[in-house]
Length: 618
Image 1: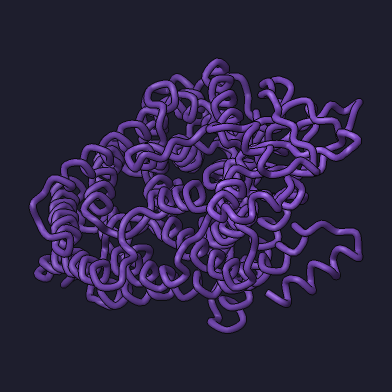
Image 2: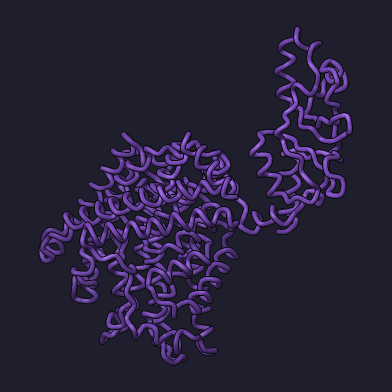
């Protein structure tokens, strides 16, 4: 705390505001989150390689096929036990958003370790989930702990939590810009420059630190998650410039991805409600979900032998697990290869991809609904790749459009379905570009993603995250709603009458003036200029000491630090003033008569009028 005070004073001498201090903890958060992300990633790889990668493929997919049922079930049981003992289960992103809304981002920092353990057990054993959402919660817990260590003001804590989530995505995805935009669109819903600066710094520091650890210490490659073969870009036109005949194709892809996203969202909702009614111990539920996923894995292997004559349609070297187990990144990489579709029987490939999309959706919902620890980002990318590949194969078979490459549609489908699942088109587009390091996908990704998000919102208003929050009683606005705070001024919502109290008025007279209606009042000096606010809580405290009432005057109980607002100030400024001053009412003056109180605005009145305006705008 002493360091924070000294640093803030030093920055003030340089002409910087108090918020500039957030840059320092943002750097620290980026470094720690990067270390946590590397540990998390290596735990998943270690467990996956031990259970699947080091096995003989002939045995694992032959006489040892029963292991495909045992490993996910055992992983689920371990998750159930760990969750019961130390916590760390359940969804991640809705929990972060709820903490930002309800507690201003105060998250127990000790939650980071249980989350790493439970998510590693789920994904590494074969549970169908992604590592990105858990690392968001790990990063937010780290950020909250750093904020509490430096005694950061309550109204700044959400920004630090955002630094943790941006750093987490930047480290795991190697997507520093996508991490920032995902945090701004989904977690904070705030695009102001004061928020953007510390988030970007934390994201960059996390990316650089992760690269250093992976390359210099672990001697591993740290590059774009997916490599795009050069021929895939041929499906986007010359240099990524779309042509008129291609526009309907990617618009159709957006519509299909939007429909699939809504179907998966509703499936998740239905399974979560069904699992919640089970009269089974929460310790056992993840094991049941894991066993169900394992049974589906055995069926997938048998179906592959029957349809394609191989138990492993996607090579063991690229992905030792069954295709829909774990995060599925190795399978996505193979779906981006044009050679995957160059077979003698394209209809069998189409059937396989469609089945894989459906099975992945069911497996993911089973894993998460029964208590597995993980997220929906990686499954969304997987579902988008399979959906895009299936549509590309259909369009190719119809032969209506020239130069249709299924792998190109698989690539764009990843971003479109991710955007439709989380209702964050800008973040999805940038994450997709950073995942592939290919700027040529921007135009088709923009079209397909915007259409997908619009389609999903038209069919079902909630995203995979906001519905869970509404189930918990947390109601969020949209980014547009949040922007209204900066576009609406105080004079546009009106003022309440002000009770003006002279600074030298005896306290007994103040009580007589208020009667039974004790409330906040503005205190003015002899020249009728604003001095401060007399809070209801302070008046009630003074009443408890009746002997002192005859000796007090209003000025002695006045909070002179409470700011005076101007009628042209925006609602965002008013909300910040309420948060900083810890009062229920603020006085307001006209810009042409500063210091002269013309009315007051209460926090309840502001929120009520703002909500009425938002409802009218919708």
